Length: 442
Image (cartoon, rainbow, N blue to C red):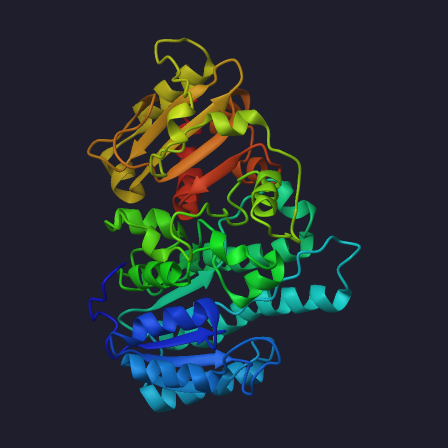
């Protein structure tokens, strides 16, 4: 597991939904450094089925070495957020970190979701995250640390993630869109990132969603606590990222992930929004005697599984994938576009961008191409780029040429599903801005 370094000693963390589950795990990890924790959650008296209150969480935080301020906060109520923030500033002198963890979930279809539940998810997840961030930001901007961390997924526009629980997906993506916007708006002042698990995490909510026995296929909340700690101890320049817990911890040198498993060695369930076939996910659960209430979608196209994601660690399944590398010597529109891009790369462009992009193209000129705007001098061409990939873009070769020649707006391509993006969305946006320079030469 990731060791504590003491970097959060004396820092004040405002954590929503910290009375139990993921929020409390993040709080306890920071408490080991001697941090101050504002437990902003609704549960002041014991829930009839869910364990823990803000006061029991406060006791655990104090025992772990931190200082706790339990506050009754429903993130749907602006006055309660303001009051808790005022108490935090009065007691601890400011706020250094905000963790937007509080969230509501209903994995139900459009016709089956009561308006009351739609309102709950939209107001708790999207509006609550936006509002809490807005109220904390004046203090976060004054902090030397200044971090916002949203427990929300990378934005994946694959329709299977909307099909069976449209309202929930919209509300969670609203949290992620706060990351996109605020990371740019407050760049240099406050770091804003999202964190999401690679696998299912065992919490009381998971018991309700997956049924009895689901815990064996989950990881403990400790893995998200370690990943959150890693993010929050980075500099403010680490911003606009959609972090997957396992990927980040592998980069930090963690090799033994059995320590995070509820049942080491047992098959794990992949989490939502990460494009693992939902039907397969449900079948795996049922094979272990679990009755999932979130069976979804049809199987994804086989083509989606033919692309090896170099941003993820190699595993036993990776060796089965065949990646087609395009020919740089070809004279088609894609090859010609890359020649123009290569000629437009300058030291200033590399210095201001600092990103490596990989393109997985389908169609007549399909294959793997890259633009390196991070390493010395920059480069562009066919095959895999040198070093770590920051952004992977998948689209047809025809749409790629249209996009780089200015005939197809990247935003429209993304929103229409013609373009899918994995990785650092802030760097993807940077590339969109650079396209004006590239297509001026085309």
